[in-house]
Image (cartoon, rainbow, N blue to C red; front, side):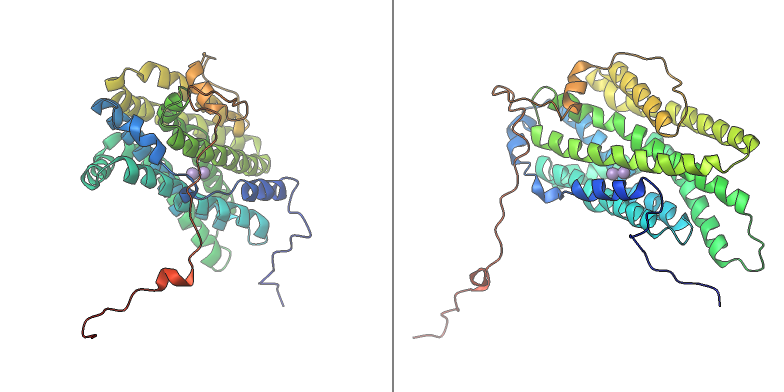
Length: 348
Ligand code: MN3
Ligand code: MN3
């Protein structure tokens, strides 16, 4: 009898990094409702319209990326793991749950606090109709869909007709797309909230962005580690082919990113700066995939680095920076929360 079903046995590590990522992921768990956004409103309400629009459009881009990373990106990579890798699947599934249940939800919380219903509706229409954003998603999600299809074939094709080489390539490509999304594409959107945060403005939204950023950085690292393990199993010709694929996808995405950045950031005169930040993070994504950087080193705006650097935050009474985020105050439901006075109608 062949062993069809196996249980997750955490007593035997599957590799030397997955359990550490498990610990790290769970220790940094947070909830969107932990952060009250009300303190940002006095700043938000006095911002010029074009600034509000650029800010909201960036969060909309982030919403789309997180939505698809949660809906398909992480789940598909998890399902593609060989069936005995229960721990890896658990870590990937946890990450996938963070994407739409926590990250995408947080952007909506920001919208719901800062904006009216009709402004939110309009913003989503902008995202749905934005050609560059749609093309960026297509360039990423098509690799997830292809892997999804091949995973299905692997699991359900009879008589050994399944091509495992082609499967590994599809898996590798989906992982490259995933690392590009996590470690790179998010950063054009992160730039603006960090730019405000670095100046002590819109601090609560900035705290949310920093929490998301902290998650995305370990997501990109983890999938990057898995991708290099897979690459090591390939022949030198295949490795060369995968490297070529990675660079082709990078330049395809870079062109689309530049167009999207100009559309969002030209009205607030920050495109030049954002492009530097995006090249800087493209290099970091390549490093997570164990490739050499392709863009020349450039100085990133120190205000944005200041917004990024959560570890060295010091107390600053003028900017509010260093206070950490203000948690939403909530109390547990009690029985009397459900006690309503009986209607007195008909009583004497
Ligand atoms: Mn995310
Ligand atoms: Mn992520």
